Every structure is written in structure tokens, then in C-alpha cells.
Amino acid sequence: MRKVSNFINRIAMVFTVSVFMFLAVGIYVNAASDEVVFDFTQGKKYRIENRYIETSESLSQLPDNEKAVMLWARLARFYINFENGENIDSHKYDFVLCNNPKQIIRAIETGDEQDTRKYVEFSADNDSKGTFEIVYTETLLRNMYDKLYTYKTVNSRKRDSYVQDVFDVARYTYGKSGKTASGEQYIKVKVIFSNPDSVRVEAKEDGTVNTKYYPTEFTVDGIKYTVHDKEVTVVGAENKKVKALTIPETVSYDGWSFNVTSIDSKAFYSCKKLKKVTINATGIKSIGKKAFRKKTKKLVIRVPKSQFKTYKKMFKKAGMKTIKIRAIKG
Image (cartoon, rainbow, N blue to C red; front, top):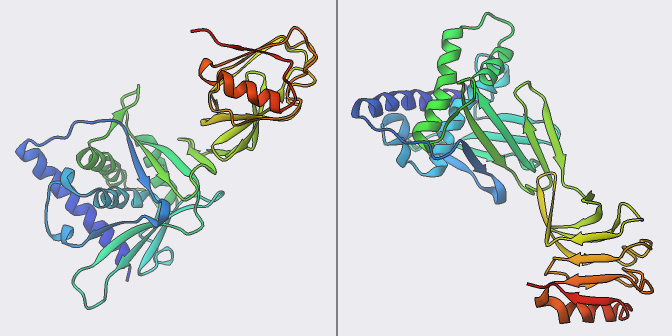
């Protein structure tokens, strides 16, 4: 019974022994940064063989998929109540990182019952999507542990040793760790599920989450855009009385970055006072009809020198051949 949970705990115990062996021989891995990324896209999985239960190898030399299991084995104690048999399947358990949207990591024991080669395998639930980001601090992990065991008096010494193990495994396997301004240890973890750009979930230390869904439209610096995959179309101005505007090469919104590739029909047709437009984007593929008011005599549109001929043809094709088009100097 509780095969996976026992197996995970045995991995954790071997890790602790290995750390002491590292210290004895003076081996230390310097922190390269403070973030560990786990990629579960395209059905990727992380697994470890039970030979690591019996041997002590250099943790920093483990393959990435086995390092991942070492870290998740530590984090398991803050997501799953291993003392409650009703919550544990004999062959699997789930890390529910987020319920809405669904973001779940699943641990499964694999291998034939008669085979001595047993594995624990971590993968994403089939319906999980987006990106999950969290900063595990000492305080957050203590709070998570206490929440799991509200029905009893928590052994603070045991809990704190589990907390320390998380930072030890991050440091000795990945060489990554950090400290807050108050001196608390922390490690950033980013989990990438299928369709990672569809939604981003950022878990806060107070237990709340900040969820950002992939935008379909937005406004930046007074210009309105609609989204098409990784690209955007300029569709208008926030202020119809605008006199000057700049269309950028790329535009960023809420953590996402997009290439500007088209200007929609009648995007700025209602901007009667518009006199100066600078197009810095070099990847414009199309300009819609009446994107600009062609009878505005004072309107001058400046475009990249490398794209001058191409863009001028686009304006002509869109019925705006009378608009003054100039190349950006320099």
C-alpha cells in the first residue's frame, strides 16, 4: 500500500544522505540563478529508477529528468498528506497546482511487479495547460505544510527539516537558490504545460493566485491591437483626435510580446487631425483599405528605409497612393 508515497520518501532520504557526503568532501555547486523550469509540453515526462534508492551519486551530475524527480519528491510533502490513506492511490498521486485553469502534475509508479527495475514517473495531467509560476519561500512552505495537517499539532522540527530539504535539493542538484531581503531562502519554480501561452498562473505567498489569459485584443500607447497567434494587427487609435503616433516593431502587453504585422482597414480613417505617423515595424505584411484618410494633405507617414518601396506599393494597392510616404532617415 502507498507504494508511490513510500518510494518518494525513500528518494528523499537518499538525497539527505548524499548532501552530507557532499559536505564531507567539500563539494558545493554555486547558484547560477534562482529559477528551475519544468517543461511538460508535448507529453514530456520526468522519471527516476529505484537504483538511486540504493546508491549515492553526485546529484549535480544526474540527468535533468532525474533531478526533477528529486526536487518534486521534496515538494510532494507540501501538497499531499501522506498520513491520510484515503488521499493516496497505491500507484499514483496528483500535485494540484491550480484548479482553474487545471494545472496538475501526476506521479505514477511504473514497472512490472516482478521486475526489480521500478520507476517513479512525473507527467502532466492531459487537460492541464498554460504556465504556472511560484516562488517557494521558507514561510510559504511552512504555511502549506501546516494547512495540510490542521487536524493535529504539527511537529515543527520535522516540518522545518522538510522545508530545508527543498532548498538543499535545489542547490545541490540544480545549483540554484536565493535569499529574500529579509534573509529567507527561496527558489523560483516555473512549470510549463501544453499550450503554455494560453494562460499564466502566478501563485502568491498569501495563497492567492494571479491568472492572466492570453489576450485577444489590447491597447498600448494609444494604439489598439488585435491578436493572431504571436502577431498583432493595428486596428485603431484610442483617441480619435490624436495628431501623431508611432507603430512599433514589436509590442508587449501583460508579459506577452507580439510582432506588428498588419494595419487594418479604416484603422485611422476617423483620425481627422492626424498629421504624423512613424512606422518602425519592418514586418508589415498588409495594409487595409482606407487605413488612413487619404485626403488629409498634412499627413506624412514615415517608414523604414529598407521597406520604403514595399510599403509604398502597399499603400498604393490599398487605394492611398496620394498620401505622402517618406523614408526614415538614418
